Length: 468
Image (cartoon, rainbow, N blue to C red; front, side, top):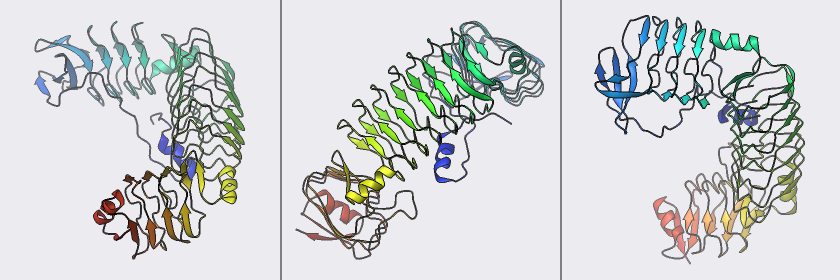
């Protein structure tokens, strides 16, 4: 079975308790986009890239030893395309020609009898699952020109297993490619500059990891599901922590995020149930989707002044989270960013209209007739209604008066508020999101001035209007 990325779908399943189907790979965009048309030439199908060079699309031959030509129909071959040789059960040896710079996703995957591959100097990228499940592949020559080896590139090969026996830290061209067989306390050696996607993923034997100076990036799901990992030292110099990097590390208790980090991607620490506190470094501008979701022991978070946006579900189901410092710099807060936290419950007790920096993020506890104050500038997606949650809607709301000053009403803001009969919307509201009033009372009436955005919205969506 192929080793797979812990994707955002799985991280969200940790929150909602559901099962999630995962993609086998995420195909990155190429800087050179291929034209759609493929051309047949002998044993090969190829297509032309925008620079006029050729990409091998499919091999149709039956040879056991394949020397890929450096030119096809006079066109220089620079790329081996996605699935070009995948599943071929005849090939035993492949020589890739000089001039090729990229080996695409799953290009040789499941070539089960392939034993030897020569990769020429000049290749810079070996993409996801490129040689995955080539079970007999034992001899691989990787030149120093290779700067990127993506997840699963050599998974299931004899070559990788041989490297693991020599050293459980498999390092190629300063990339820590694989560490799945490591145990105990791990110190990554100096010289490593990148921890590859899924390098430690699912490694239950490690307890601590020390990352050296020089590493600038921690890849996708690099430490995901390392369920016995308790502490990580991330050095100053790391600038990016990839998606799902530490997701599902259920025993991770402490992590130091240095000031050099400017990007923490989605679901990076989701499901880290033992993590008690986090200091987000100044320099981060956005807290991504589900970054700390389901960190059920997390009690306090300080968000720095550099942050301008907190994405959906960022701290969702952090059930112990009571102390949050949100600076005035935050201008956008996604739906359910703080759902199922002690902090949100405390705010609801103080005032059922929970407003942060002029953003009305929650009104699900409001009852009867509600007036939204002038200090509010925007009403969030699903603020009063059901947004992707079946039972999280307000049935006690009867009327809403929005005062002048509010500029936007988010998608599904009042959805499934089944007893909501009247909403007064001022001319200051310029945008109303999709399904903002879906599932409200059948006699819902919008009160608004003629020519307003709300009047146009009501007409378009078949809602009664009363002009004021």
